[in-house]
Length: 193
Image 1 (cartoon, rainbow, N blue to C red):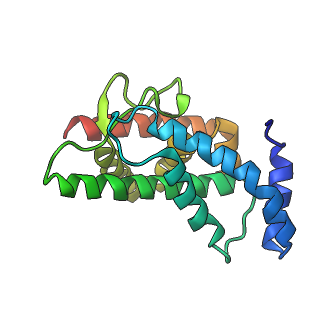
Image 2: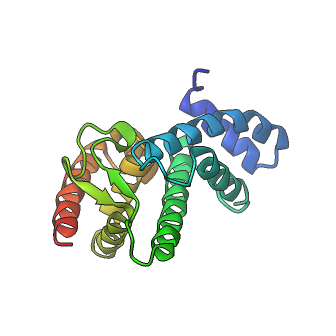
Image 3: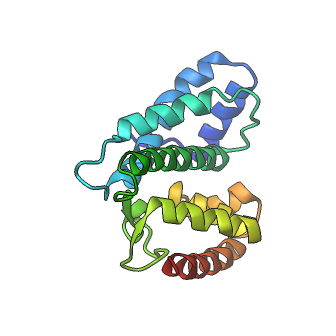
């Protein structure tokens, strides 16, 4: 199923926000497919015994998203940026629970050069655990919140430079600059672990 143009998704989000319950019924298949694609990207490189499935991740994120009744969805990028943030939170909660179960055992691993299909990966050929990335992103958010948000939208949501710029209300050139600076910062922070 081909995804509708971003303006159609934006209009459905606005209609839903304005109380049109039929808009949610139209929106559901569209957002579910895109959320499923995001979840598949996140979990593609997890170990074979990973217990969180893409469907469970999508369902949890979807339930949290549609439960947010006081959000003024600006556009498709805003919505999927929020979805990326929620999926990140769910994955971190799952990783922490797994880590606690194993009392310091293996954390869930991600290969940053393969997650979400980004050619310009954060850390080339480095096996990175999700908890380390979350800690580093939280540290980055304390010193450079916009860079942290760019990483979240590009890495976790899989948004393009242009979509990220639209979601944050900044220029694509600024997104590129912030993305490159954030990758370097995260590489240093994670390498120190």
